[in-house]
Image (cartoon, rainbow, N blue to C red; front, side):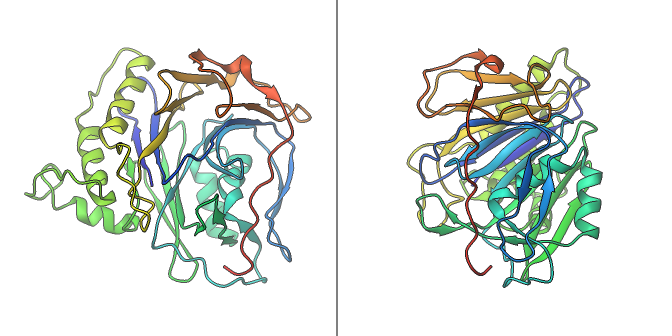
Length: 330
């Protein structure tokens, strides 16, 4: 499921778009989490614990997991499906973290990509999979993160739980299978990237990766406003979106696009667009209260009326949702 496109060489704003492709309606909502929240990784024995250093705005899945978001330091995170993921059997000698909290852990704790990469490389922890919503499928995901400098990293767990980190400012695209290193190798076969093959057109994740890289590379280098930056990166995301009716029950990464987001890391604005709503909405992080002790808040996108434009004032105080617990073995 999904595609991510980063555009950092436009001379105006670092912007990142993502499509959420999935088998069914994920009943996603926007949530505001302040600083100072004590959390634990739901792993039972030797569960990872922390208190959030930074506030964040996230898009939920089923109100059971954080799947996309941006924190007050302009670090953005996106979880995508990766069928090759493997987390290994539970090793209680290292801290455990439910995959439902993985993205939230990153947003809560790190101000930039370097901090997150350094932590992962020096503080091993184990991701524990969950059952995804009502599908009965076991979560198999990887994650891409970006910061306001344009830096980016991809985190994958394959080969029995071994972490693999790909860290480079030049990484601008991520989709699904195959793993990221193989996506980069595949890209070299195509025109504009060292090969002679023409632009592919299928809904396969590898083809979407190539198309997104091609159109991202074609975006202008100098624009006049952040509005143009957002419009440009959305145009690429829409090009690799998937229409309704393309779901493959055996491969969740071949599914309709349910919603998309844009993280404007320069101006600290988070945009959301549903494929079933006629308008884009956004929240300005500078207008939100992330102070420790401030309430958790939510914008109800499932039951709410149609919205348009800046909805920063429409968050309502509420009890936080309960993150999905992991399966008994990973």
